[in-house]
Structure formats: C-alpha cells, structure tokens
Image 1 (cartoon, rainbow, N blue to C red):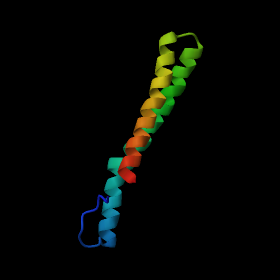
Image 2 (image 1 turned 30 degrees about the vertical axis):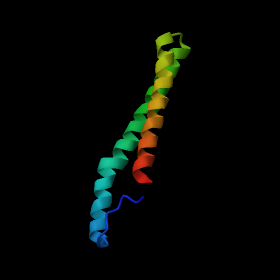
Image 3 (image 1 turned 90 degrees about the horizontal axis):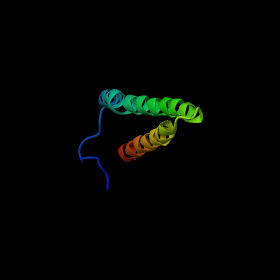
Image 4 (image 1 turned 60 degrees about the horizontal axis):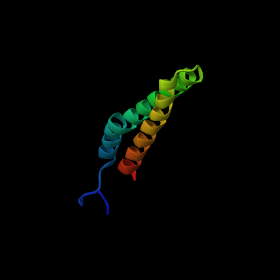
Length: 78
C-alpha cells in the first residue's frame, strides 16, 4: 500500500523544497545517529578488550541501536 496521497504532481521547485526538508529531517539525523553508534561501538570494544566487563555489554548495545536506526530508515524510505 502506498503512503502517497492522491493529488497533483509536484513542480520541480516543490520537489526541491521537499528534498531539502527531507535532508534535514531524515537524512542528517540518520547519518549522525549511525556515526555515533559506530564511534561508541569502537570505544566500548576497546574498553572491553582492556578488561572492562560492563563495556562488553555496551559493545553489543551500540550496534543493535544502529541496526534499529537502519530498520526505521528502511521503513520510512521504502
């Protein structure tokens, strides 16, 4: 089932404005969230290899959060 509402086609200017809005509301938070998850995964993995047991749990938590972000993005875009 399509999420589009029936109506007229968008003009090129309207498409450009919509794409600009989508960048700030969807694309940028996605990139920022994935960058944070990747960074924190590396940090916690290094701490876990140094012997911190609690960091091992966080080393699995951050990739899981990243996977959830990707899943949400796929639900929005597809």
